[in-house]
Image 1 (cartoon, rainbow, N blue to C red):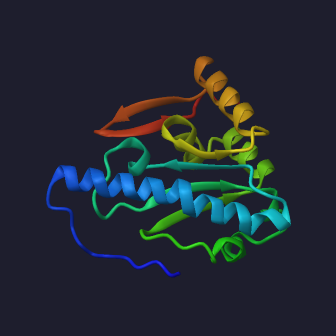
Image 2: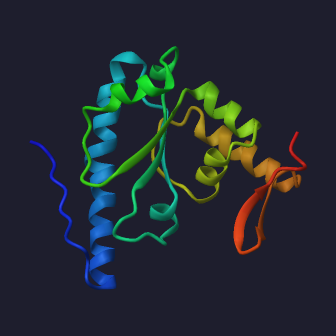
Image 3: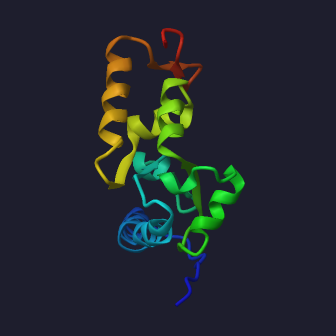
Length: 166
């Protein structure tokens, strides 16, 4: 069964909310299990985090689903080729995946990569095997508590201040 994308624009806030809730169910019940099945033979799935406007709640009808997909199956696979491993999984809205190995996810946090910082700060966990994400969250909270990373508003934009990171 293929997925179709309808360009029906929600007319009211309640329609937009209902549309968002339907997309969230589809992510949890269909898309993430498909990714898990696709990656199982090559090493399985470590975690999936939804971040960005869909996680924060300030989405519009045009918003995509920003995901961090972490799997050992991506080890040794070029970044652009990683999408081939999950391309059989379709979704009724635009998906913007960032694919990390577990080591890359940890390295991204230690280097202050904005994607992982945003995901750990505002993200919604859609899947977690319990092996890495708790450690990443603990490291993230430790960096915040020590003042190594801070969220600041500068010129109306919220940014990560990484000056104290080590």
